[in-house]
Length: 147
Image 1 (cartoon, rainbow, N blue to C red):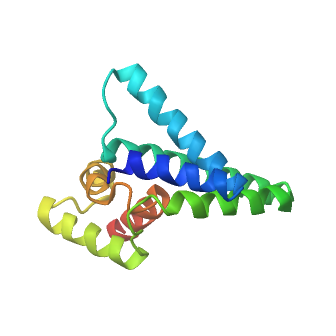
Image 2 (cartoon, one colour):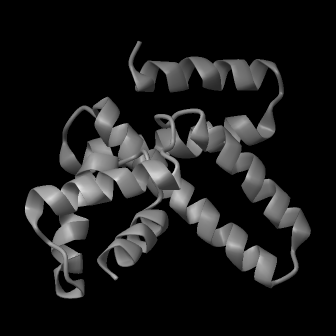
């Protein structure tokens, strides 16, 4: 079953179970998928959908941080529940240690080992962890590894 079919089935389930958070999140994912398909005139692959979900996850995490700074606990809780729904559709997320192993292996492969090479190293690492790790964590690990 493709990810697109899974989203359709789980949207139906969320509507039957009156799960408004799940319904809203899945609807927004499907809306972004449809928009991408119309813009690019292609059928979305699972990889495209994972990229869309990762983008939405990043948006929710950034929003959650802003809501915490603004002392809006109700909106923080809403973001947390939306993040939980989004994580169900992504591959298992890598731990910081697993990301560190990938970064070190990439440094050994490419020879990029100075802070000047950070952009090149990030370009080499990101395709390996796409959809599996938060970009902020990857950036942090790359900085630590180059220092």
